[in-house]
Image (cartoon, rainbow, N blue to C red; front, side):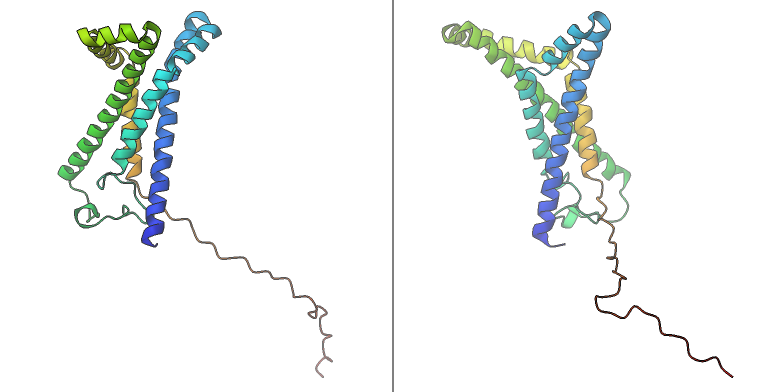
Amino acid sequence: MAPDVDRMTVAARRDRLVVAACLSLAFLQTLPYVVVGWITAGGTAAGDGALHALSPAALLGLVGFGVVLAVALAQPSLRPMARGGAPSGATGSDAPRGPVLPRRRARSLLRRLRWAVGAALAAAAVHAAAVLLDDATRSGAESFGRSLDDGSALWAYVSVLLVVLAQDPRALVAVVVAMVTLTRARRSVRPPRWRPARRDRRPPQGARTTHRSPGPPPS
């Protein structure tokens, strides 16, 4: 495969992985609110839970999660595998060399875990910032400016961030989704099986289709 085509294939796979991870995270972070609302108070509460889980602040958090995950998948050591089992542009230490040693596997696991935690923290940080800005739009610019001056805005941001990280299941779900995505990215993509074109066995137009009459039987 040509290098340009190889890079385009890996970039397209990276984009698909990021989009699939963001959609999976949106579904998984909405599911608990819907289930708990349905069990406790019925369909109306389930709808309210879904709206809460898919609020503009939560969707902006998904954007932060996807950006960090895309940056992680652009790293040479975490880049998605190309067809044939080698990562795009893998040279030197990035190229696979025989069986993976346990120490090397552990380093790879820790690297993926760091990026997964970073993606979850980015989602929580963007979510908390969106909540704080939403409150600022309601209180007005003058009140928000005073809160910036006395430091209360910073403490409010930290408190919202801690609530998102400690009490909200989204952070843990984001870590799990990111880990699964980063692990899938290192799996080799099998090339499509080549199937020979079926030959058209019909005789061409104008060809002779009548069978010759058998000759006289041997005497």
